[in-house]
Image 1 (cartoon, one colour):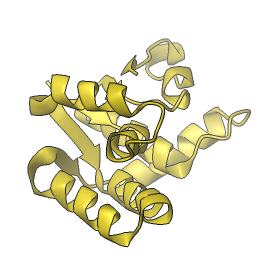
Image 2: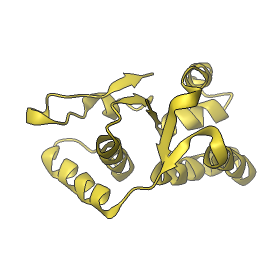
Image 3: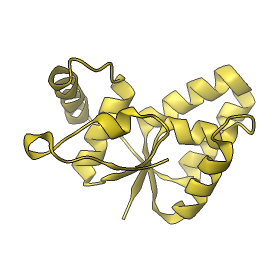
Image 4: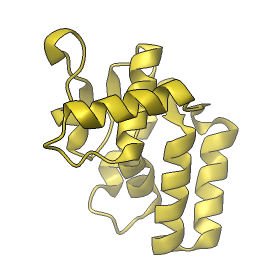
Length: 138
């Protein structure tokens, strides 16, 4: 089983001053052998961390994830197409492209659990008649 990790959790775990820091660390430890993320999440995590905590911290965090902390799945062109379809289906929501590609990756891989402090993960619905939702651990 895999659990998808969003930028919100990676960043919170890296920033000791973040309000969700302790919870992020507990979640990452609890699901340590099941962690999955995407290349798009790595880029977003690097950008956020570099802006707030500095270049060196961003490099260390992303490299730790990339070399074994989590399995990193590449988003495909098909995932980007699905992200576009999600935007059209949820025109009343301002879901980010990163979130939408993450959900496309998750659906492609059959992953229905996520570690996220981003409430959009709880709003998004998929499957037949959009009745399915992700189990979000936060």
